[in-house]
Length: 105
Image 1: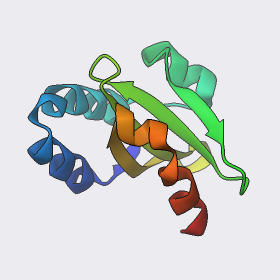
Image 2: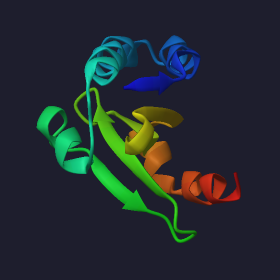
Image 3: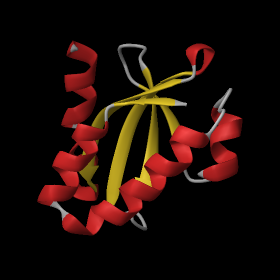
Image 4: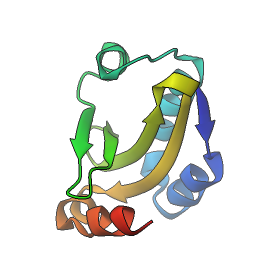
């Protein structure tokens, strides 16, 4: 898969160093993957969830670092592209403001 963009991940792990290794592992897996659906994603990330927001946008949320972090992506399976939308701590994710922000983009 083509993953856009690593600088977002890097900025997050510079702020939260514990996220660096698991995000690098995710990156390595994702860039080598050939996901065609959420079922394919589950083969490498069984706890990933496809979440449809109120505005109709569907994102894929990955649990990173044993659930300490959440990686929110937009996956366009037809063109083999993963867009990094947000990287959040678990508590930031739980607040839910990211949903409204993504719907406004």
